[in-house]
Length: 274
Image (tube, helix red, strand yellow):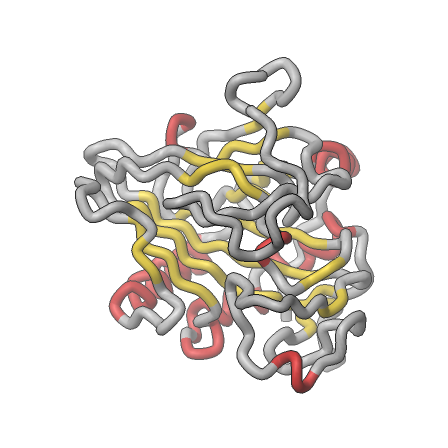
């Protein structure tokens, strides 16, 4: 059964307004031990969806992997039984919470590769406004290496998703979505949010919130587990292309426009009776 973790109104309102909030002390020592064990197991047993997102000449290494929770008991325990489902329900203002997927992001010490500004939802096969992602580090994250957000950018506009290395538009035809604004060059127009984090903390953000991050310092490892959840209004939105992550065979099982009612996306809130 998920652990309860009531949020105050100020936090819920900030999430609705800004699209991102910091949450302190959400995870206890047992959660963190499970996450660290799950991450190290994942790194030692990368899935076919894993990729190295840094350049070959990068002195560090940026590794990502997706959708491994069903074969990683430590991940599954945290996704189902930590405070995450209850927190997700409150932030989304949703009666139900579905697990969408997990995402591993590890930047080894000295990684130069930044994560450029982007939204997550345009890469996905989901439509709906009730969404939340959690970015959960198991290492201390200083301000210069943390995830940064463009405050309020989740409200409406979808921006063209592009590949991080070569900036190619693979998901939507050119011209169909707005191009990214010059966020760093116009700080008055695009105020940014970001927080230094300690193990036990996390940030929660909407899947349409624009976000980015820098590399890591020479002695700083940044291991992050990201958990993504869907609320009541989320529906299947098949694309004509391979989404990131892909869900093989889902289009044959689930029509467009219906709830994500599939074993890949179990309901984790409210708790099951008994």
